[in-house]
Image 1 (cartoon, rainbow, N blue to C red):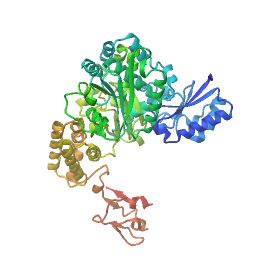
Image 2 (image 1 turned 90 degrees about the horizontal axis):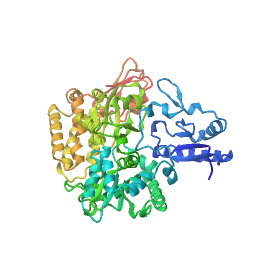
Image 3 (image 1 turned 30 degrees about the horizontal axis):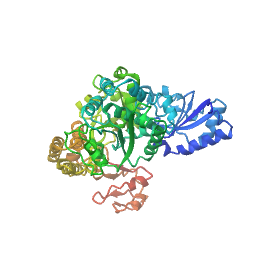
Image 4 (image 1 turned 60 degrees about the vertical axis):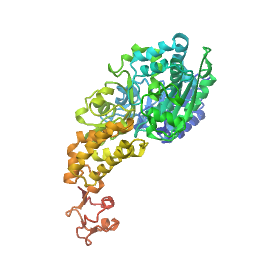
Length: 597
């Protein structure tokens, strides 16, 4: 085996692979080989580094140099300058937007400085397709510890004492769920990993599976040992091919090493895992709907109790946890429950992974300690709002969450605090909006998603959300009234109180939170028939500034409905009753003579 002196780590997450990471890896390997350095320099794919805004990323070890927005053509310069001559390629280093300083070490970047990587500890550090690299970072040590030093009940007790709560959205105590399943008698029990991540803008679980699949396998085996199960199932979306591919490779490697299957580590414990594919239904993120889908039935939730811990897959006791929850298990076993309780808040221990997206400078995957404030996330880790614009709101918890505003920026992020201010943790989506965002459009976007994803089993969700969407559509077109706003609020509350599952019970949150925080904006839409953000197409009005118009007729020639009239070399006008607000005239005008109000 080669004793490598340097390593080139190329981000192999979905985002970077979509931006030519494969070509970067191929070029780096070819140039390293051409230079005769293949026994001294190793080039590998890793999981996601998290800093998606600056991808594709290449990291050089051992000096920890962090190259951003790398292209295949940059490969030669990285090898010849950095590897051979020892000179960093400064144009590829991260440039701090405030100080304009080039930073080579990711540890000194604002994006990473407040992060604590627990669930993501191996993403961006190891080759996810090499079990030896996982083992080198204490991989499968926790499983070995449980099987040889701890009995099942003691294993459950460690997870209970850690205070770990489910990261899938509900925040139910993980140890308690394991304990309940352990106590329910049954010859056959199941461990289920929920990898059906479907929130708009969310990519936390997918990135963990792509970057560190062995940690999920190890955690599921630990759970199986703790609750008395010998079978595990991973329910994953079929549209996550890279995560599926790497998980399959990891499963084969674990079986080959005797870490999965019969008589694991010679202890007599049997555990096997199989993959089940989801077809992309958002509602199947709910555990009972997920179980029905795995059974070959329609993915619909059922009323609880009984809970899956008592009667789940095929009517057997079943423990369901999501990917991020499982990713915390091995490190808790290795480091101890007390260690985990030193991170986070009293009622929300540990860290949380968020997918930070929207109108923010540093888009990416972050892992922060519970209790960090929204202000720290947005302005320190996220680098502030794009183009120097003002912050307007942040949607946490995906379609089930709510919009939080400037008055909430100093709110500590944990399960209870977010619920108290009208939002929720959810699975970890965070979408930031600037001053040009429209609150009505925001709520309408999420309602459109919810209507599309409702399973249709209960009337409040199936019909009620459709009516909510229709009212929001009326408001966005200037057809709503103050009575519409009253109906909107009242119906939202009814849907929350009467829906069958979490999807319906939380679906009105975007509506209620935007009404609460942007009431004046709703009134503007129904009374003044205006959208100051300019996002509601039907409320836009295009005007030609007479002093700027030279009568070139360029705008009139591209107008598809002949709404612009005027003679050559004479200022034109727009007939408002004909204008369809397509914006073609604005794009064509070279004199900035057309404005939108």
